[in-house]
Structure formats: C-alpha cells, structure tokens
Image (cartoon, rainbow, N blue to C red; front, side, top):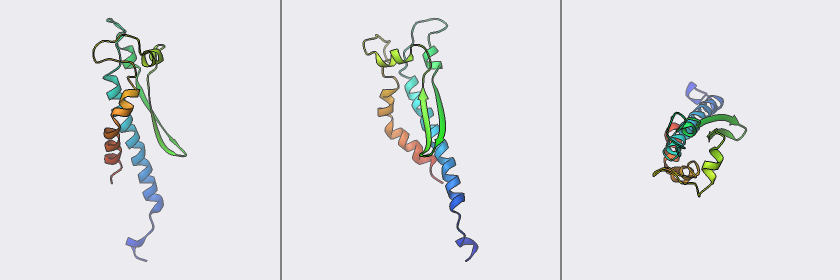
Length: 118
C-alpha cells in the first residue's frame, strides 16, 4: 500500500462534519436576513424594531447531523407571526419566517452546496 492509498475515512468524515456545520449556519443566516426583510415594526420609537433585533440563529450537532434554528424572542413574536388579520406596513407581514422558509429554498440549497464543496 502506498501513501496515496492510505485510508482517510475518519479525516474526511471530520472535514465533512465541519463543512456541514458551517453550511447550516450560513443557510440559517441567510434565512434570518430574508425573514428580517418581512418582520413587522410595531410602532415608531425606541422599541420599533425589537422583534427584528430579537431574531437569532442557533446551531447544534445532533445524531442526525447539523441543525440550525432561526427564531425570534419577544412576548409578541408568535402573535405577529401567526395572526393574519393584523395590519402591517407595506413590505411587512405575518408569516415573516414561514414565507422565506419556502421562497428561499433554492438559495438555501445553493448555500449548502457551496459550503459543502471541498
């Protein structure tokens, strides 16, 4: 067996795990940015974009692989997201996270593909 024939399975697996972690984080950042474009402002003043500012990504490694969650953390985030009868400024809407979860699928796939290339 030559040096070129040496088995590097564990090394490649570790490299792929690192790439997957970065890929889901980058995809999560993209989803958060797309969602922030739709997040409603509640009013003018110092707390107008508290909802947008509360948006975050969090990643973890599970037995199934890398996972990234995008979330908003205010007392009213769920209401703003779910109640379709609330009135919003033009360009802002309910379902501000759910909508880009569907519309951004091609971009999210492209990000994962780009990040998983080595």
